[in-house]
Image (tube, rainbow, N blue to C red; front, side):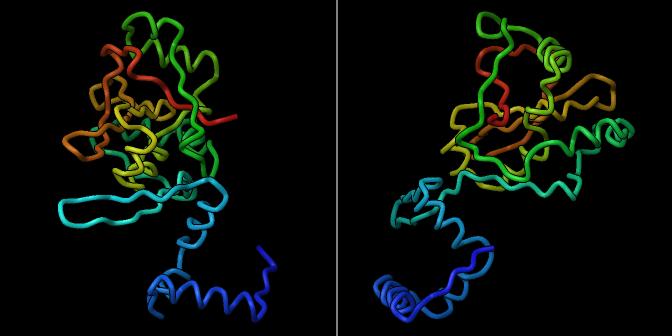
Length: 213
């Protein structure tokens, strides 16, 4: 918690800046709520940027904060078509809770299976390698994908445009028994979350994303 104290001159500077920007009292009150001003501070620190969204008849300035925040005290809701018994196994719940409370999307590392850059391989080969090398804890999971999805399509364009973002830490059996991995992709201008069969082909366009060291 900061021990910041504003003197009269600083308060006057803020008041003048708000007036120059055409702010109203209600807008200032809204800006002081939640994390809005924290996100603005991210711009000053070089951790976020302002993007102007242009439509046919208007422009809108949006702050894109690269930080994704995760509340690991609340379990995500998984689709009904997944094996619910598996989802409630202690080892899966423990794996699900791993990961930082927040991460910078711009610092995520791409990773490929050694054979994946040269040819198409099965998803099961990738998953088995991650398990054997104990790399799953450093991979994104379902809850991280939900966090990215909640940031919106402009955030996805900024950090993952043209990519398929997998959550390898959350591989779960389908009700029929075959393993599925969650992934985010842009589909018809929207960011959607699907579950891919690991028996399918995975090429170099499907890298794993891992947390920065």
